[in-house]
Image: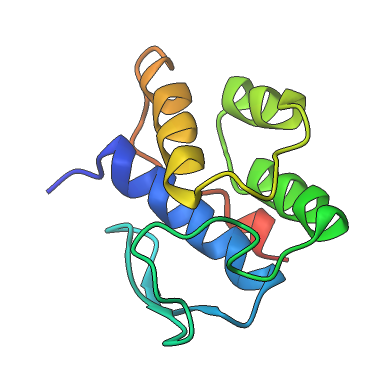
Length: 121
């Protein structure tokens, strides 16, 4: 089954978050199928947490945004993520997934690539 833009956006956001907070853990990633196990700390009691809920601060938000851009293999998506204004801590994580999904959907002839493995370094 081909990777969907929602899968790719979700994976990119989850992986980027896992670098910045211990409250999100990504395990058993399969970047070919664009699936992984994502564990959210039991201390997070909401379904769609904000970045503040995940204990990110303004400095970590900037690093998260840079990492997210690095995980995007499409030049136009990477550029757009880099051009986002600073994301507020009160923003829900799901909103960023939706934003990235929309950017992927705007790519002509998107090849279904899950993420750029160079962004994992």
